[in-house]
Image (cartoon, rainbow, N blue to C red; front, side):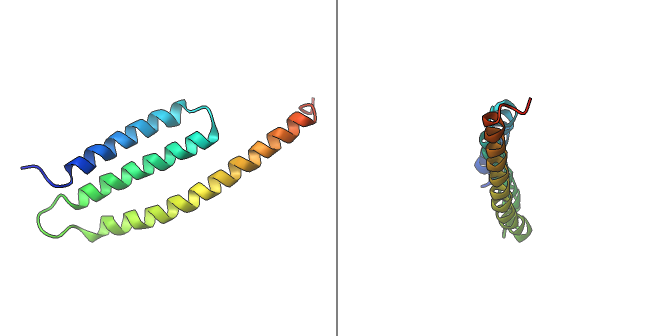
Length: 101
């Protein structure tokens, strides 16, 4: 008998695989940050599917981990985007100065 979380498990695994491919092949920092976020979403789906696998009530611990992970992912994404913007500004300034060489 199939568990109710099987479609979520398959979609989560697919998201992790696609995001890993994009993380390796993406040319820009913003695309890599987005790939990391998509990968995190896939992991969250896998955790939720794992929580729904048992009979009866789902396990609340993976749900709490996912909720905490979402908060951490938002904060980490904001920091990564701010750092990417700062690096982009520094690179533009270096190009305007002639590269410093």
